[in-house]
Amino acid sequence: MEAQDSSLDAHTIRVLEDHREELLARIVGRLTALGGAYAAIPSDELAAAASGMVDAAIGVLAEQRGPEQGELEHAAFLGELRARQGVPLDQVLRAVQISAREALDLMGDVAGPTGLDAPRTIALTVRLWDWIDVVSAHMAQAHRRVELANARRDQQQRVSFVHALVTGTLGTGALEEAAAGFGLDPRARHVVVCVRPDPAHPPEVLERLLLPSTWSVGLTAQVGEDLLAVLPAEAAVPTVPVTAGIGSAVALPALPRSHRDALRARETAAAFGRAGAHRLEDLVLPAAVLAEETLTDILVARHVTPLRELGAFGEDLLDSLRAYLAHDFNVEAAARELGVHANTLRHRLARAEETTGASLRRAESLAEVWWALTAEAQSLS
View 1 (cartoon, rainbow, N blue to C red):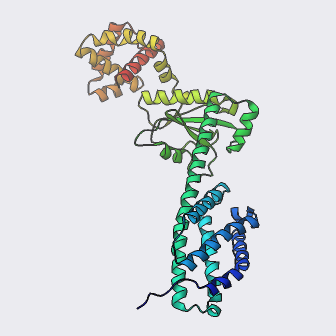
View 2 (cartoon, rainbow, N blue to C red):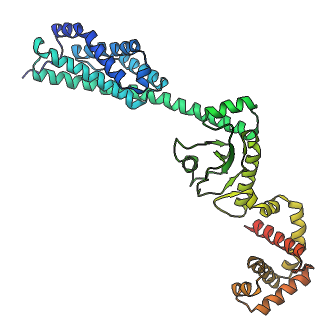
């Protein structure tokens, strides 16, 4: 049995070409009716793009062939063009389907007069959709390339802007203009949130926590090793599974100070093993312990080293001091934690005072002991 000829004869081609302008008008009308980005594209530009696709489709049906290189290149050009015009990919592919549907409807309208029977019409339809599948794939690939390039460019611009914000390298006029472009209110107070991504919590995961949707007010960017978020001061900082620092609420020009506070809060909290988001004002003494190395060395030498030199008994004394401070100077509660009698604890505290010269009844000595023990614990962690 001979294979069914699924090509268009010369007469059918002439009939389709006679209806070409009608087909283009129908396609342009349907595309314009899509609205969105397509509504902003001039009708003559839509007609030119549709004309090239229609001519190629007629060639495919007339010659029983697949897509030619020039047709694939034209499809890629249209995909890139629509991406630059801001047309979403789903709308681009929808436009291709609409154009094909209009062409098939026209072919159906002229099938009777041109002698196209049902089997040939079905075969032509299948051939056209096969061609459209390949062309659409090339169009989609080109569109995605532009989208990725745009995303990289936007990311670079965002990183540059956030870096300029936290380093204070933008003038007032440029800052206000750029802030408005990124959706920040130039007149509002903002805070910097500083987090350090890790393998278990990559930047994209933390970004979704800090800015859960595209409608969230704020800006995130990775600057160096840290992920920074610039958020309105009144916004609640979401819970994050890593240590984070929250800077002070300031006007945008003063954001470098907020960044410094956030960075110091994060570093302090991390050094002391505290998870979650922390503000520097909640870590004043730990931050001082971490920063003042010289004073810390003096206090450790005064309040820790003499006890450690006593060996195992000295370690008992240090544990006693830690429990006493942790329970806000409540001897009974501290003794229960240590599993000793309250009088035993009192004796140990007295020996610690005798060995170091500290007085646990004086606020200044208590502060020094707390500082020394806190620094010593941090250095051992």
